[in-house]
Amino acid sequence: MSSERAKIINSCSASLVLLVLLLGGCTSQERSLKKDFPPELISKARSNFKIDITDWDIPTDQPIVKRVHLVLQREWGVNAAIQDYCEQKLVKNLNVRGFELDPNAPTELIVYIVKASEIRKPVRSAKVRIAVKLCTNESVEPIIMGIADGIMARPDLSSGVWIPRLSYFRATQYAISKLMHQLDNMPKTSSSQP
Image (cartoon, rainbow, N blue to C red; front, side):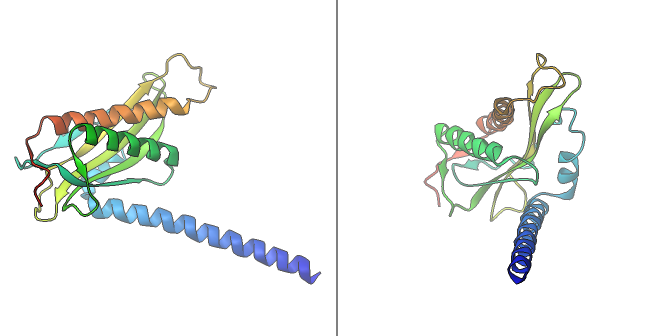
């Protein structure tokens, strides 16, 4: 009897620890999103998921330093595989463009995967939304900030079939392409600067 009671207590304790870890992780990411982005952008990023609200704010003409610290996080509910794929694509695209990724760099490229989900109208699609901010420690104003939506239409699938993970990867790639397009059109300085 006492061994059964011990098993139940251990099982309950393990469940409680798991619950605390899950809630702690969610709160941590929530706090980071609130810390890094203004409330109006967060509100916009979490609304109107059915439409493409890709929009960029470039408040200054400050050039981009090509030595950056990449910060990538995902909101609660976004699959870890999508975050991993997003990281691979970001690193590859930044490297191709001559960016030097350095965790000690004073310039941060912050990318949050806000949502990755299915939309059904006007066409059934996989959709990924990212919020982006490029900023330096010295500047109050960000160099660039905005939202990019990546959408991969799947009109060939009936409503009862799951959208494959590959479609979400392709949607992620489209969102990253919109970010890269913005970066490509901005002036840059040497990555050798401190």
